[in-house]
Length: 305
Image (tube, rainbow, N blue to C red):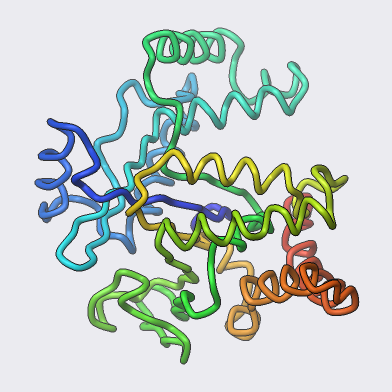
């Protein structure tokens, strides 16, 4: 079972990477040994579980990952590096900031934690990049992640590995980056768009949200101008010809087929923003309530026994 997390990924054209990374990623994309897309999350999860269940646990791998998610479009290779070491450091830093020292120490012994943070500081001091190509959200999809996409960019695959699958009527294999139907037995819900469209939609939503919702909200998974601005900055750090992907990841296992088919979160967000812009309060509230009614129960499962 995959972790209950969703992912926002940026795939940059391989030509955007400096040498020798450009050549290495080009060769990697054609390699038969690299983890295929339908198996990649499982490989990442297995490696992380082995590190964290060791004695002592390993907060981050000793070396940066040489793996990546790969897409091809119009004869161009697009690369989304896993950057597992960097993402592990960033995640552990958030974990320590969000929990009391005693709680954090129960998961990772203080000497191990301090060594991991020391390695991270050395990474920062060396001027290494701190911008991951992948953002992770556990137990829910943040509402601001729906803003860069449109309903027609959705791809839904229903089924589980080894049992076949059913392609939803609105699925697009090309959008999902899959080949033939028999090559994609995984259960997935994915949106993919161009970087240009993603930036345009976020930029258009910002003044509307700022005027109507402000910069802050009490609940961490509500929409706010502050979160949209953070998203806009992150998107702005990548190549303008990149691709942006929203992957429900392991969250698809918290919803049955009917719930996944009925999930119109991106479309509802689009309508809510249109309603805000036009001053149609009832429409905006109705769409926002539908979004919260869908995602609050999912988020609540984090605290379930």
